[in-house]
Length: 390
Image 1 (cartoon, rainbow, N blue to C red):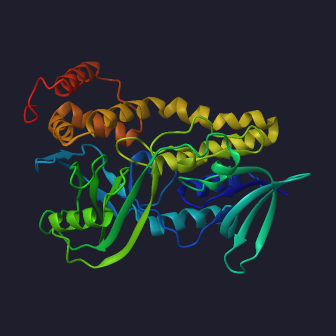
Image 2: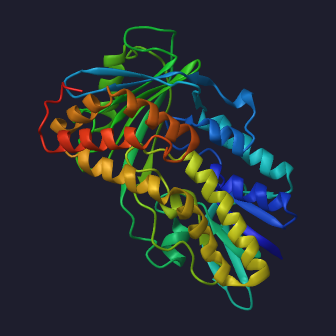
Image 3: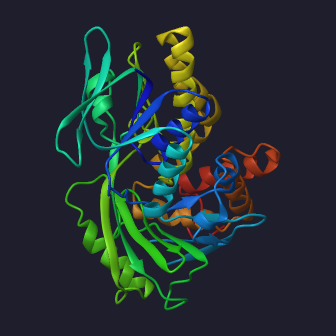
């Protein structure tokens, strides 16, 4: 009898399994081998600190972010007193899985099928090596199986109802600085020709780069848009190492547990930041609070499963609300996107944005800066100022 079975072995599931194993619980996790999520790979310094990530997992440290508008305006934002760390999900995710197993979590490779109940609870999966169904008896289940989670769909009310965008990227062999490409800079492209409702990106990964985009609109050719990004950056002729696509949720679910023996985490719970699409930090934090909730439920009963959402939203709901409002305000048209990039010229916007990113919390120390930014936002949204004014 296992205390907990974690369905999913990405950053979220591996973190939950690692934490529970270190706390002395009998835990197993089920992972689909070979699946790599499309992801720019950016992680903040807080993640590195909170989750003890060794430096060898950081394939690049970025000190500048460039915002590109629909008309080609470029705004370079220096990252002061910090950096954006970049990881390659192929290696980073495996590092986290290995660390979980070394902590004592039992690793299984296969595809989740269902949860069965009788005089107990079993997680049933199809073993990759044998092709046979395997049943794992357990007391609690953590669903960390990504956007459009099968655990959520089968077991949690509202688990089928979650908005998402489709993300696609290509990992390429990148040269040094060439054309518009700079291996020390992340480029974020806000252009309806690339994505009518999200953005495109060119993110360095050391000897490689991630080039991709996301959209929730039907009929958008993701591969053509990515090819356009590569061409504009001077990377069209680079070797393509792999291609990946997957849904990215846009809003946290209202409920993360079934009130009995299941709690959701990470993408399965919808915790990807609006506007930025950032997910690694929130996935790992989601795995951590799901592990805490599952451990509490083992001791105190199933009502404790609600602790996962409560802890997560207490710390991050305000950031999600602000980013959601920003996406709704600025991503709806190229005219709005142009104004958004123009707003990024502002020194207060730049400083507060990256302070919030690196520390995963809104900066409250400079209220006058917030007032100025709020006034400029209103001026842009009302069309009082032209996009090229700052």
